[in-house]
Length: 452
Image 1: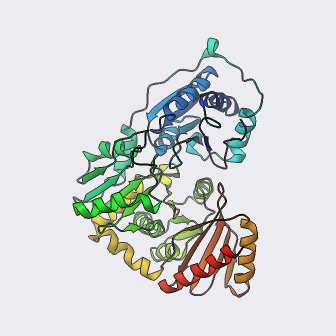
Image 2: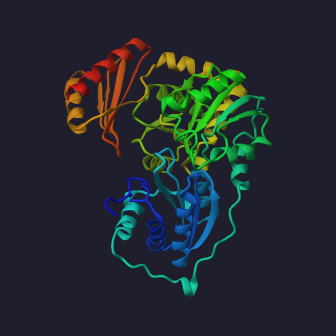
Image 3: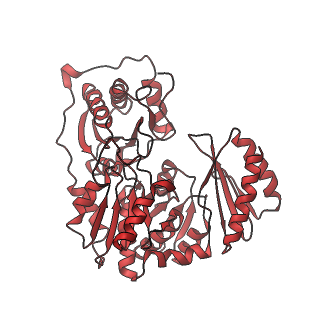
């Protein structure tokens, strides 16, 4: 294998050069030995290679004496849920989420659904898998058992618990599963909820006939937006392939920037948990801090990324964490990210307030307009960031390096950071009520970036 598929927070690589059945089998063996595991939860998404890779992982685990709790085809959050709920020593999810079709990967959590990081799991696993080490095989002595497949009933019950005390209105909701795994969960929830679901690209299909399910890409939004308008729906929801992220459209079909949903969900949860702590990322911040403080909560910033969020949430005992990239974390969901609880929180707020989603976010958009995340392909990201800091920092009110570079003035601020996995720079700009200033500052930063 020419290049390791181990990344900062998961395993992800090309098929078959980096991800293949022998690798998956060896990964299962390594997990068994490195974690000294007795029981591991294993699930997989809808991609054509995912079930064979999951089977190979299970074989590697069982041949190393580990019992396996299979989930079958599911979403990543189901593996998180079952890992904590069952008391297993860890959970493995075979998924490429929103990556191109020739990719696959493995997401991993430890006991209690604690995040797996380079330090606590992935680096030792990489060293073991990528080495010439021969793992002990106990297949003929004490082979691990294939325990009964975990069903969705407890997971569905947990989702429904989110709205048990809410007088839900009979909303009409467009659901865009993108031929990923979310559709089956919507079907399981449907009989318990007073909603009319309009389902598009609903069936899981590893052939991905409608392309990669990644609603963060503007070109992927038209189908759901048009369906909302065509059916006169109250809102639209879309998910990526393993549905650990969810995205929203208001009743006019307009895509709602994820940044504003963080504050909205935080506000909703703070009603039930007054004074609670809310974790947010440093890319866009002013709206979240404003909403959380007004609702009596305590906003706490975290470096972007699920491992950082989960760690800080546990340390601070935060009730909720939200990233503008549509990852939402809940304390009573093992501090894990979920693509189902956020939309249930939003429909609860719509039902309780009598307002549309557009009405709820429009005021916030006007108060703190933002650019959304803009990506640039670059050759020397550190040099560009250093030049931008030298240009803007001397006159700034605040300069931070929590995640990339954040620079704040009285009426505007920006964050610029490098991608962890691609040769990209990502910028986000926001202002205090001045949309024209957003455009002006984006143009300024763009000129500086392209000058290098």
